[in-house]
Length: 67
Image 1 (cartoon, rainbow, N blue to C red):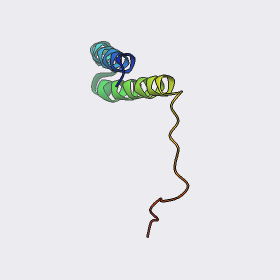
Image 2: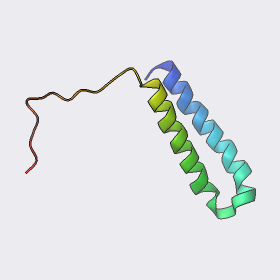
Image 3: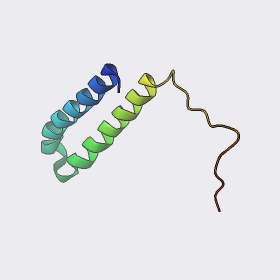
């Protein structure tokens, strides 16, 4: 994992902890679900931005076939 990706993950979880504190008073018991959703979206967006240059290619031959 690159330093930028590790920093992005740490930043998103720090933001998530802050959101739990702020949303706890507003949303009550739904704060955890809302925070997890927002952190998940942030991690997905960060992964998309940081990994945009690396494409995963599937080899055309040698793939296992499902039964």
